[in-house]
Length: 308
Image (cartoon, rainbow, N blue to C red):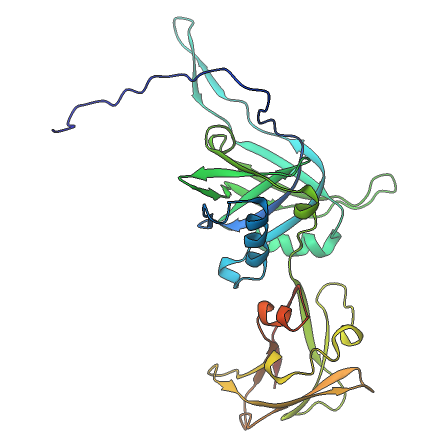
């Protein structure tokens, strides 16, 4: 049977009854940036524990698949647009479009370190999962999966300076279409404590120190934002060849690292690279976050150091 010129007329409206337990969003206190194509499956949303495990795994995933916790929100400014309503010639009115949610959240924890990192996402094509003060994690339901709400805007504002009365203001702004939070909402009841303690990876900045000269490098490791020296915390853990990666900068070819030894005097690691190029550069970094975590260095990802 052809469906040519046949209109599928659904009956408008919905039953308005509700039971003793109904969905009621509280104040939004946090969020997680997720890739636009990430869909948490029925198996992953089987329980709060399985979903938490999936999110935690995604925090350490490769960059293309990684999710980024946004920290804890301390204040909300709601600049959402009202629906656009047209007044017709005979006096009737009609809604021509719904306005976007336009929400600005202020945070304190993470300060400039977090603000600087979030500004790298300005203009990116990301989605967001939000959670409220009761630990309700919300996105939108696509079939049997939970997806992040597609964002029309993500913008981490430049900081506003402390004026002696107000703290330095770090404010991120998001905008999205109402349909996702109203008509297509997907949600999972989680533990607020679990969600609030989700933390993104910290960068490790590698640098050469005294006596470093290919093929024998003297490398120090510090956190990328605060500059905290990681030697005292991970001196033994990082003295492991499989945790270090060396490449020919010109062609990306892997280079063999023959040894990694603790240098207690310099609070550094002596990394010996086998057969580096006679001319050109070598890049040095650490293994993937999941490999580091398995070695007891959890929650970190190394930046790449180029050695000439």
